Amino acid sequence: MTDRPDMPEIDRIDRAILRILAADGRISTTVLADRVGLSKTPVAARIRRLEAAGVITGYAAHLSARKLGLGHVAFVEVRLSDTREAALLAFNAAVRKLPEVEECYMIAASFDYLMKVRTRDITEYRRVLGETISALPHVASTSTYVSMESVKEPGISQI
Image 1 (cartoon, rainbow, N blue to C red):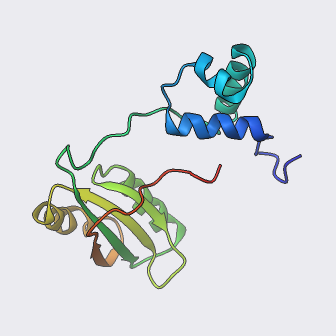
Image 2 (cartoon, rainbow, N blue to C red):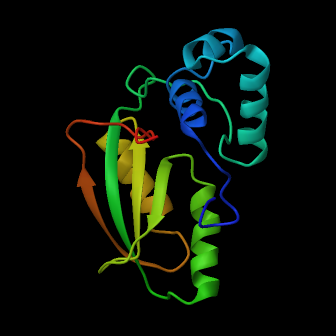
């Protein structure tokens, strides 16, 4: 039994399925079933259950940002001039529309949000910062940290 009603039961076989799918979302159900030691039908049923429960939210191709010319990564601290709910909602809605913002988190710190911004180069980043990020609703100030190297990319590895 889980502590939260919105969280489905996930056993060791579900975790194995999730680990394998996270590494290779294109794996066939037959090969996946063989790797977890079940037949194809129960594995397919488990996948459907995990999808229906929202544990599996989709499948995607992993792209090389560098080969697509998007190797510049900057992390941006954003401070808002207003942190009432309406201001937060306006900021959140505007950020979701920006393709350059790869990730954005509300933070409990001396600033309000932390963004991961991906662009071609520092020149393009400067333009995005000046014309787009700084113009978002209620932005009072920003601080930028430029990434020199990616050591570990996102992905859930603790399943």
